[in-house]
Figure 1: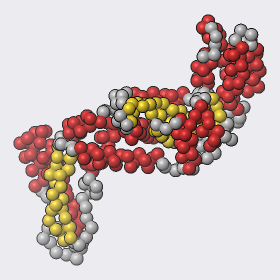
Figure 2: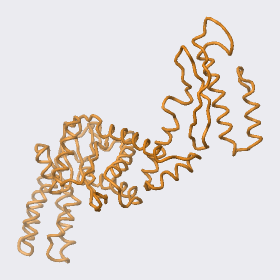
Figure 3: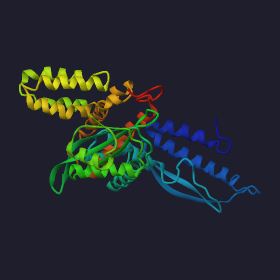
Figure 4: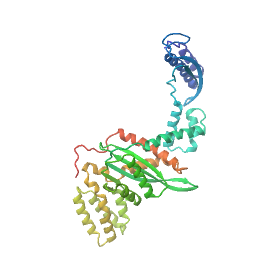
Length: 390
């Protein structure tokens, strides 16, 4: 079917395909876009070429050349211009659709762990044309703006807060250093989880954690009923400084790992773990406290240091027993965040060593945005319907 205003479109497209086959798709697309933009300009003006009429909204004013990079090659377009009216072809969009596509391509490559020195070569293969280092830099800057907007977005009421950290190698001032990546996950009153924020820093642990928690509060985080984390010293100090009134659940998985360091004999380790499971898996808080006292008494003579450690530390992992039974399995550990950290590690493994903290932050932010969007549109993590505290 031909277009009523441009009956030559179909014939020219067929001729172009006949002469070059599918290798000439760039030529075909260039032809189609140029003709469609002419049609759109005529519709915007309200009259056809060289016609007069009261419906005219402006004057055709020639064409402006524009090269658009696409995955099928570079398209040399003739963008119609208009005098006396506002007009820009919708097929292009202001700001160049190709640059948006390039941003997405760069983001996806970065998320997939492609090292930065390969980006230019891959984008050349993707777009079918040369991509300069300035193109990559400009696209990266746009990504950083989008990611910063996400990291500083306003927060609201959150019931459960899960915190954890992991480390990546970063080159800083000619030295390779361990860089902490702090991540916060929240569960809201509807039971949906989301990534609240991420921070990357080479600073001391407590200072970094404190600034991270303060930033979450400054963005509107409120309504917390429980914080779940491990017993990292820096995190503990920061939590007490910023959120001392919020109940804390010490990750039970990490607690069991910590307990093994206090068992004096290897042959006792299995028995100790089984005894601790009996405490942590209790039906309610009072039962767990009674069971803990029996376990502490059991090891008082053969492992006094272990007994003292359990008496001081195990109660920190029993806070979850104050929650509705259906929530305990989800909130007794930081395993959800540990799984997310493993996914981050899978994505960062290719890079091995990041050239700077900005590069590391860019990648982890991209992965976390992707994950958070999946969570927010997926199933609820917990349900607050017909739930009463234990």
